Image (tube, rainbow, N blue to C red):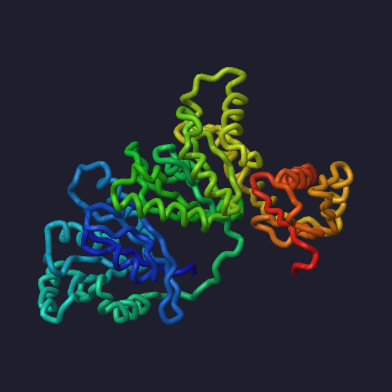
Length: 439
């Protein structure tokens, strides 16, 4: 079996995300005293007494609302409930039982899953009597905790792991490609993920900023395993007025750091913006693989020169991403969506490509013969040998007589010569010059 899945559900603002962050051991879900802040499912890998499990935080369930976002949150929660082995139904011990709690309890009973009733916000001994009214939900003994004060969490974890049946732990998949979908708000990132995976795993709405956290979606295709990370739309700092969105920007950058390959989603109608360049630059600086997606291609009035014109615009505005392949597609119609994973696989192949030291030195020797380094103040750079020190991302070290003599233009020249022989499509290359005495 895979790791057991534990899902936290409940109506909005009962403390689900605070509990999630406590159990995950780090701040992952956004916690804010605003109902509806956690809109999508958030995943984390947790461990207690050598028992590993996947924890899912869900958006608050509003059973009888017609609000577009809350309706979709309810739909997402239902999916998470369906996935779960154990469900933590969270209620507010200070506010007491509500009509919404009854509605959620009825929904959970239909799931026929293992349900633990968690009575949160029991911060003091005198609050303990508050839990008795929750027996009326018909879900067994309430478990009193305070997620904010970290009270009762050890006992809760003991109960959770006692509910795991026929379970044995498995090692983390090492061959899983992690893909972060990045871009400015409302460029179509969530729609692209839904198109790739083939089901509604991330809320899609035309309200900018809908995806506020980074959401992991795991799937397998043609025997290859992938994790898609849907990042919150990253806005300019000047436009981030809410604390919530400020947290989301941090989460988005963290998602880039976790990824192997980033899909930069650009709205083809708007073209490349300053914000696109900033997001792409962060990925580039972190050495991530990159595929550039021109989304909403179906909305463009095209002729036989359109593709070249748009590619030229991207290359001009994102010159440092010359290595990144460009795909025009439409998440709405599915146009060329089937090409996306093929490109990701190709980028990953180059990301893990290692050039033997002998072949690499042949490339460098030929490059130096064709274009010797210029002398600087009477001193000339001498290159002795080169080696590839790492993959993912590819990094090369070139040993020389004096690294102070290396001009950035010569580094770029060496990079181009390496790429002429080995394309390293979709991947930045790092080249470091070191004095031969350095180790």
